[in-house]
Image (tube, one colour):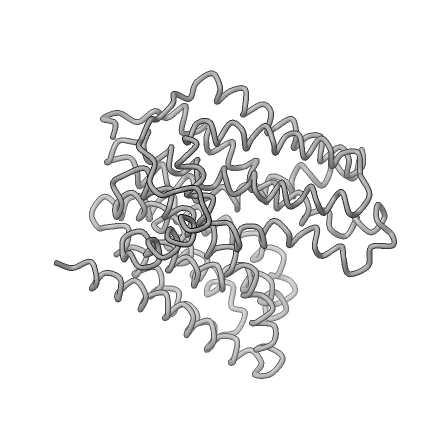
Length: 384
């Protein structure tokens, strides 16, 4: 634990996190252009997007164990260099089987970064600043998608999708060099064994612990709804407001988490703020049920989700003092987050088709209420 926050290093780790989010976003923003590079791929194109998520579902907890064993700085640097090399390879637009194989490797690189970086940020932050630094970390996905839409798409339009892959490779390599220069090793004793039995035991250890598992357990319910809501909500917003509201929702989520969320965590625990965030999400959804597509209700929902977003990451070091347990918790967050993102949109689309907008709203209320109940149950288990 440090008495003074290393803000330049924290910002560099956040920048590396933008690169990790870019491993998802670079494919999502150019997905409609991939059929020109792979005209005979058909439905297999979908796997270029989803393989990184499937790797996260399968190996999220394993990543936490591996990162702790090989040390956080080393894992971070290796993951960045691997990510840079993979993007450079993808810039050659290899055949589809090789592109899919590269996405599996990229998924492993992504996992190592999203486990190592927040663990390092927690260790490099003074306790009073962890709410701020880990809330900043929690914005990496939203900021990366915004940057790639704003700058990555014009780059791809002007010079082809190869240029976007190359730019991503340079970003990853640049932060690998920067962190090599400024990031000190953090030596902590590893926990768990790198073996099949050790990995299985690690899963049991994490998900039985109300401290290690709590952030990831709540994160499952959040991720199940967040991306899905952004996907299915637009048709219910008035056409003249639709583009503005959908662009403003992710930014509202980030702004609320970085302002109200950070201030709130100076007086209440991160877990309490997550629960408040879930409760406000439910209130916002009830508002949308009464007034479907109302812009103010959409932005209120985004703001409430932002409270859950930032506080969930800040809860990890509040509940777990050791770096090894923090990396296990962030591994669980990666695993449950990928599971929620993968399942949420298709499930809610089915609900929408069967029960319409009211069914969608009440399903989201039930899911987010489940997140609130899960945290309440975990809190009771932690009580002396």
